[in-house]
Length: 90
Image 1: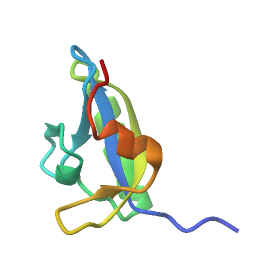
Image 2 (image 1 turned 30 degrees about the vertical axis):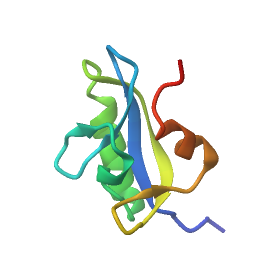
Image 3 (image 1 turned 120 degrees about the vertical axis):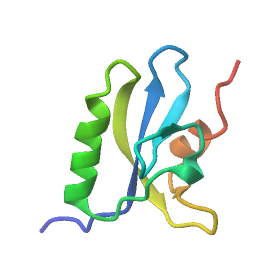
Image 4 (image 1 turned 90 degrees about the vertical axis):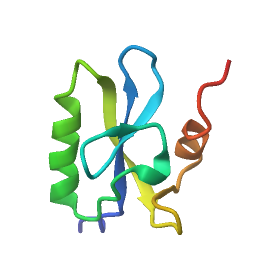
């Protein structure tokens, strides 16, 4: 039996700076998790991931991260993703 799909966002790191970024519904890379496109369909999520992975001149390491709807946009559901939203640690 397959698992139920949980909502996702596409995240990656900027190629030059290494900063965490999120793919928005209008194909921008935003540093803000709440601006990310919340994807609730598995097939659409795979297409968005392919689109992100093809942008090799801008980002690296694109992947789908679990998220949930929030009052101001998507919110992370896992500690690792919550930590990534706080920016780089120097």
